[in-house]
Length: 247
Image (cartoon, rainbow, N blue to C red):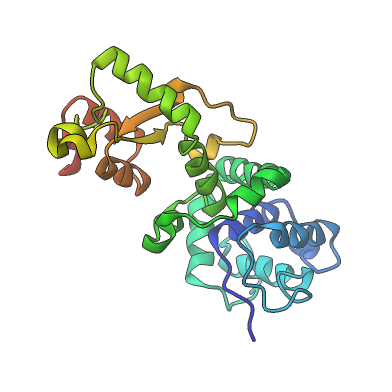
C-alpha cells in the first residue's frame, strides 16, 4: 500500500529545508533530512500511516526534495520529475517569499514541541467536513491552533461581556448582523469569535488578549477563513461591502 499524499504542512517543512541545502546534500544520510523525517512523523494528523518504517522516512523525504529540484528553474539538472500539482503550487507560492516560508515552518515546529497542545489539536474540527482548513495557505496545524484559540470559552465570554457593556447588543463587527434581532430568543447571546492574529504570526507562546478577538456572524467568519484579507475586512467595516467584493 502506498503512503498518503503529502499535505501542505509537510511540503512547507520540506521546502523550507530544500532552500537551505545544496543539491548534493539532498540524500537520506543527511542529518537534517533525518531530522525532518522525525518532524513529519510527529505531526498530529499523520495518523493514516501505512507503515511506520516507510512513512516519510529519510529516503522518502530525500525524494520529495528531489521533486523540488525538478521544479526549481535555477537547477540545471533534472531532479525527480514525478512531482505533484501541490508540490509545484507550494513551490511557486514561496520561492519568492522564503521569509514567510521560514516563519511558517518555524511556527509549525514550535507548536509540535508543545505535547499537551498537540493532543488538543488532534481532535477533528467541524470544518474538516467542508474542507475549510485545507484551503489555509499556512497549513492545517496552524489553522487548528488558530481555531483552538478562537474557541477558548473563557476569553470568548469575556469578549462578549465587554462588547455588550459597550454596545448593548451582540452584533457582527463586520456586517452588523444581530442574531437576537433576527431569531429572537433563540439567537440571544449567540455570536462567533475570530482571532485577528494572522496564522503566519501565531505561535504556541502567543498570548491572546480581548483586543485580539473580533465578534462576527457565522457568514462573515466563514468568509474570513476562506481568504478575506485585512484590506477586505477594513472595507467591510467601513460599509463598502459590495464595492470591495465586486472590484
